[in-house]
Image (cartoon, rainbow, N blue to C red; front, side, top):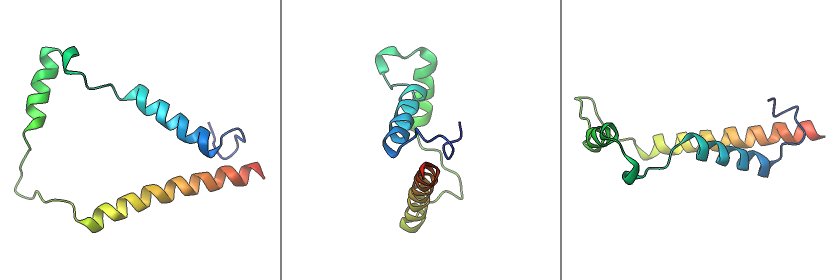
Length: 85
């Protein structure tokens, strides 16, 4: 689907579509429905991996990433609005 050419896509529709997509693609985390394999994986991921070059993200790195995401959303919204006019 080309969002820029589809004039039915609005800011609200785009956000709703993304929300529905995320809810469908990312399963709920219910321990009561876990298999033994799920339990093993959970145990493995709960312990942090440590490598010699591990370091925490800096505040600046996090800010740049979130601003980049926000910019991409605003850019897409602008394209949709331009397609409507």
